[in-house]
Length: 113
Image (tube, rainbow, N blue to C red; front, side, top):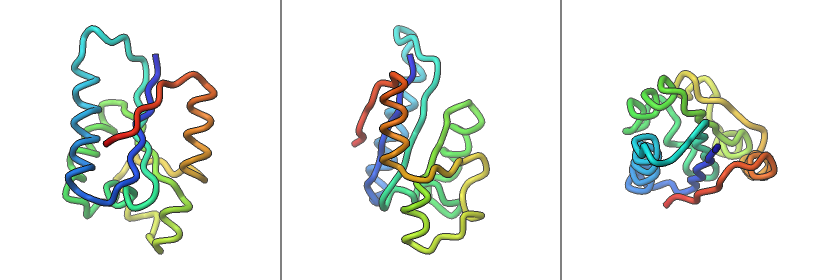
């Protein structure tokens, strides 16, 4: 099973909540998970910046195989330099478009928090 976690909040507490949910799912041996995607749009794209207070946790997720994806529309509307993303974070043209594609492909959808 594939899962997409969707976070759109700009608050650090909500980012940590989302990251904890990803960690908990990965640790759950009763869940047969093939691929996890963490998608950020809106103000949540800040969590994927290399200056984010959770950048080290994002790096760990990327290294463990979690697909971390940031909405290009959200990044562009906030004038972010795409080079400021944590290494391994992928840009997608549209966060909502990515969500629709993931759901059409059969991914389970979890809005966090």
